[in-house]
Length: 125
Image (cartoon, rainbow, N blue to C red; front, top):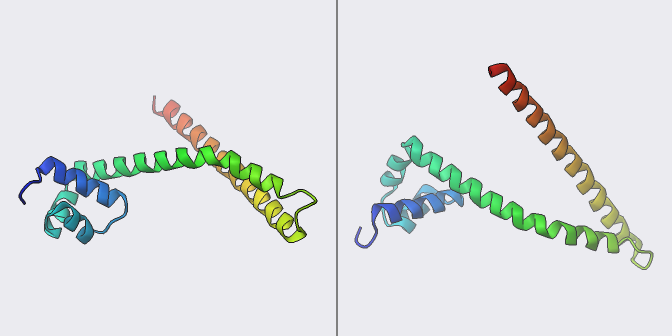
């Protein structure tokens, strides 16, 4: 495995697995065997590093998506004007209502989970 330190190889494996690459693909990218990937995944600390990297990737993606939501909603709103064909207006209205309902549901679940976590902490102390 010339040219790749263990640290660099681990970083490549972690990034590949976090992106959803299979073990064979991760091994190819890292220049190691599939058995090396399996052996690394037997290590709980290594698996945690993969999960942390995946969570960071998802947080970054969510942040980027969040910044475009306002533009997307504005676009859908503009399609509700009377000059827009009825089928387009209907599709836009439907998309806005679905988005609003899903957002409300997600916020509701988030609040419920936070409340349960707070209760669990207060009971544990």
